[in-house]
Length: 283
Image (cartoon, helix red, strand yellow):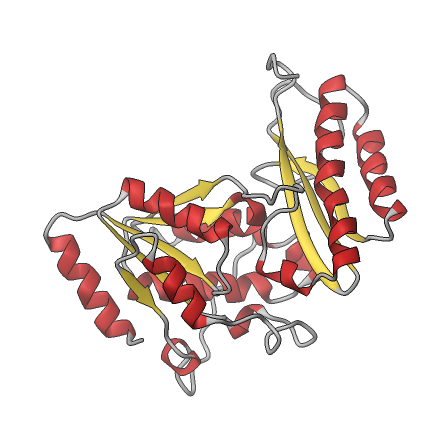
């Protein structure tokens, strides 16, 4: 629970030449999280996972108080996946009384989630930086589902010259294609059935991309599929994988990703799919 104790434990391990992997989480863990843990365990000598629901990345109308929390279940799950340490600070440990310093990032933090959720990525960058101070690891692991978040963390690590590798692991999906998320527990049975359309629409988008359809047409077909299931769309765009700038034409050499944010009932979900190069045989 103590950031100074956590730091000393990790530094002691590092002095023995051991490689440290770190997975920051907000708890309510699922197979997506444990896939990150398993990757870190495979690549590192010691693995630390944090459990901290970060208040600074929630907006005034968002679900901070309702966000699912079950530390005992999380602890037992991590114990089965060879995690050495769990860092579970309270809010005052990470944001002491009187604290007023935040990290602001432009570039990848500006569009999409940055526009729709003002202050969100400042909260993400600030807590990831502080967690990395408490857990000075060789590598930190994130899932590709939160693509924009990964870009923001990479930018912060690069600009602040932090000595840590940012590792991105594939999105883990349920058998129906829905990307695993702690917020999936909010979905009713009927909403869960409707939410399956999100990945189905992304798969169709990838197929249409490979067929060479126009960008606007690909995007509109996705919007039509989601709207037909009464899924409210925040955005559904094809963008450059690194800059997140809108792509206007299909190109063989442009790395592209389809980003979606939408609401199924009152539950907001995000997802994405990397679009293959037109030059690849997979297209």
